[in-house]
Image (cartoon, rainbow, N blue to C red):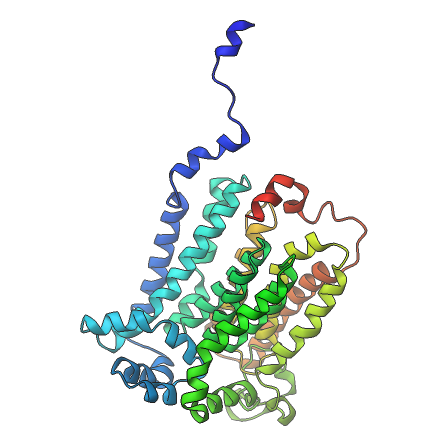
Length: 424
């Protein structure tokens, strides 16, 4: 009918997203993010205890804020690069006349801000893929209110939050075909803490091309931040890094899979075997190489699927960092939970139930069970193995299994428009 032609045309696909974009990044999910991060900061930074910050980081930070750069590089702990990245925020606090606790809280501010930025990124990605407001609010809530992240703040290690966000953001950039940016983010993650190198393999798997550019930008970024520590005072920084990276066998935590190999001592504790002391933190990094190669061989004929599950590969490597490190501190699972949430939010159309279950289980095993079982380390080690081994098996089955059909495994690749949006 002629009258029908003057009616308002139906909104096209390009116009359908106009209304949400008018709000920019601030919507209901942003409110949830702000509330959850505020609660996390209040619980993690509200007390007077600074944990390891007092003995490990504060001497070097005081030297840096006093203008003694040489002393800072000499006293810096193994994660001195993270302190260097956060130095501008700590300097602002000192300009305002803040004391020791205020400096630590300001050093944690960029770590919490990085979590907020990741929440905004994931929410935007989910909205472009047509996810409902409830699913997006659940995703940002799980990402921004992690019980173990509170423990990391209470023990003086906010760099774990920053490192997890940098690794996840690097893989997200790689999935969107930004090799230089992904390489820069991996370099920042390595400078933040040495285990950030675990993100290098998943980034290479997620990139369709430009892998050499990503490696070059990673090397340049990490080298630029590490150079002052090595050149100005190699003995202090490198010596601490080697001590932390290699000799960890005598420090034996029940939250790892080597517990049964330890020698019992008084108080229910155990001492690790001598051969394990020579591996320390390097074993999870070493095992990441064959796993990444195996994943590359597994997905060489299915590059699209390999790119999608690169985030799950990152989560597996970060989980193995917890399971195979003889001294698995309670805050070690924080980066794994961040990567798990990112994979769960970007690879499927369901709410992030897997990530929520992983977050609750991690808190119960590493925190809740400690009080419930009066610190019985044998029981804690058993609970850790019962929680971690099935998770590792399920992730390996997803990553390395042989199947003849991929039509049900990669929803982001079944829809060309959604895949185009994922490429940026």
